[in-house]
Structure formats: structure tokens, C-alpha cells
Length: 131
Image (cartoon, rainbow, N blue to C red; front, side, top):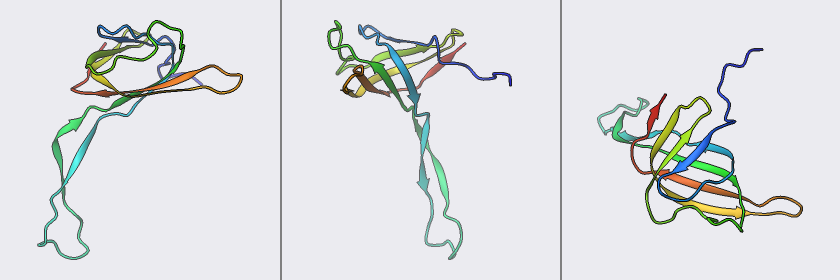
């Protein structure tokens, strides 16, 4: 069977001026979303469909990073309290970038295993894609 999708191997993350370059083990992008505006009204007959319109604005989404955590590293936690340009560069040089801030950061450890962390980044404006 032929492989038709891109692989994540070789992807990298850069964060504006912040000195944050973790060993990422996986990432998930929530995708874009748009709210629904309920336009239903009392003039609709029983058992008819509700009416909706899309909102004018959309949410650019979140990026969740799973990474190896090194408590002895110079930069142990990501940038906090500022918006930075977050860029993911894929192995084929395509990029995915946007202004973002750290929404959440947590780390965990377990017996006989490495320390890991989860960093959730909230995009604060439109995202750009380039080939």
C-alpha cells in the first residue's frame, strides 16, 4: 500500500523571541471553529428545523504540544505573559504560523520513566500557511 500522507517526523517548532525549543514528541491542532448564531423565532411552525447563521468571526484554535521535560534545562517552562509568533515547520519546508500565547503548561513523571510535559498554546489571531 502506498503512503499518501505527510509524516510528522522532522517537524520543528520556533517561538518568536522566546528561548523555547523543546523536544516535541507529538502535537495536536484543534482546528478552526466558528460559532453558530441561533436565528430561530416564534414564527417557526412546530417540528420545523431551527435556523442558524455562521458568526462573522472564527476561533483560530489551539496547539497542544506533548514534549520531553528537562527540569535542568535553561528554559524549563515556555514563555509566559506574552504573545509570540509560533511557527511549525514541516519536513517539506511548509510552515504553519500565528501569534499565540501559552494557555496552559503542566508536567508529569512516573516511576522508571522520563518526565513529560503538555503545553497548550492559544492562537490569538489568524494563522498563515506557506509552502
